[in-house]
Image (cartoon, rainbow, N blue to C red; front, side):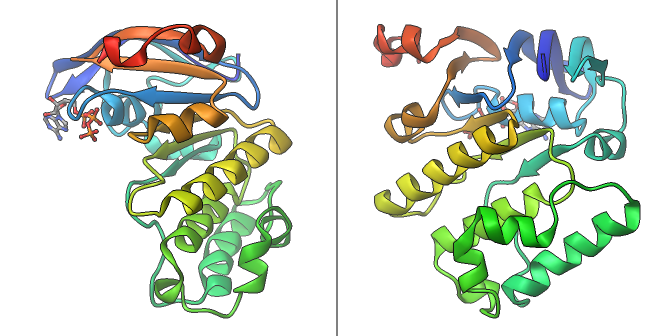
Length: 232
Ligand SMILES: Nc1ncnc2c1ncn2[C@@H]1O[C@H](COP(=O)(O)OP(=O)(O)OP(=O)(O)O)[C@@H](O)[C@H]1O
């Protein structure tokens, strides 16, 4: 499986927050990840990226065990985080934002997604190439953050509430784009969201976490048969 966690226990200062979290994601799958504030969603992403230590359990990316690797090693293997908030340099133009990261990736060697690929995938960025990032609409800034995350060789996207602060129509547009990109590039994504209805539209799998334990983990079809709110 491209990304999986098995009985993952992780937390802060050696104290567990996640209690045996397990999931598997196939190529291009979007895993919608729901739960109350403080339930453990961000902690899960931090454990996958290596920002916090895994206390026990396994994480694999494309068959390779990564739970003991440094953040840098995991980034090199293509784990890409779209952090909460706008992950862009606000004073730089769209092109400059993309070029900075593109140049850094090129300097490191192999990369499959270049600046021109990002403009093809996200045409709005090509149209706004010379605009100052901080002056773009919220939705466009998130598209830019997504574009930056895609540069290099993405193998897995970790999306932390990309819809925050966006109007409903822009949320739909952004999510449609996220779905298109994941399917086109065959890159799996974990999508942390509070906008459940919108996230469900692009989800292949659904997970609900409560106090560090997964209380639901199933396909979208299974999730549609139940009342998700019962699990919160
Ligand atoms: N840096 C930290 N040090 C210690 N405990 C933390 C830290 N960050 C989060 N926690 C704790 O871990 C638990 C899970 O928090 P987490 O941020 O993963 O929740 P979340 O589901 O992402 O919530 P939200 O939707 O508010 O972002 C909470 O009890 C929180 O207090």
